[in-house]
Length: 408
Image 1: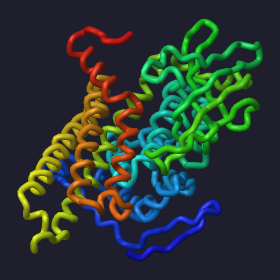
Image 2: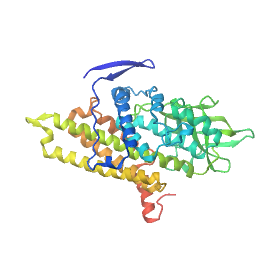
Image 3: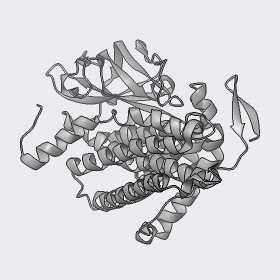
Image 4: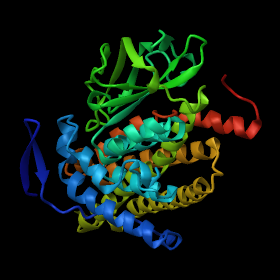
């Protein structure tokens, strides 16, 4: 395999010249359920991933490097806020289109999908849904184009699955708010121009505020030493007496339900995205099984390999149908939090299992950067935890089934 290199921010990034041969499985002809626009969007994003992400992603992950140059490129192809109305710079597309975009990007890498879905679902969505008209016009077009990169501040060092216990707070100082506290495990934070931050008022009510880079007392330390999402920029948000203009408070909704609505949108994108990672692992394993010769024949001819591939395809097909149906319900405004939880949890669970089985089919080669398997596997270990852990989504479903909440 030939490799070239490019300089990005003073770092040499290796670029594979071998073609990305990915082919999407569609055993139940789910394409027949898609519109021509859906297919055109998928083709455009798939070509983009093959051209811009696949050649560099292994080296970026190895070097724990976030390729900032991808941000304006995501803006150019409409990956940021595709469901946001065109008048604010978005694509004005439906939720199936959004899911397809997330699926294709995460097929390339979960960290790259995190960059896009945080921007769209956790930054642009709350500004559009809860922001003033002035806020929408000021921030959304720049976020849509990639001129601005945003992040979402909810999780705190001591409050992850229980965000209602947050201690980050703001006080009314007359002509401004004074914000104090910290957030952690924040995708995009080290590079973000703005942060949508959730904090408690003096009355204990949760509100969203838009905090801009450069505001005195606002810092974004980067998180190092990650073995997952290594091509994604992750960090903290620290607020030390940050003066936030009153015009930066999101006026449309307060309470924990506001950030939870954002997480529903993001979890929907993850349901499609994790499925993309699963399909990439399956496609690589299928091709490797046909090319790898042992005992004088392709390993794909052995029963145990065929069993693994058959089970992978079965789970992918079921998840494809779940995601499509959920997309229809999202378009109709009928999808519930519990339905979204089921899809997110299922897609990530089957993706992790498929990655592990694909690694076995690849043998020792499965742990190398020549194939995407180990990278997907490590990435998915974060995806199974963030935006609602595997167990929390079980409890959300349990509460829906029984009417009894297992936690506050």
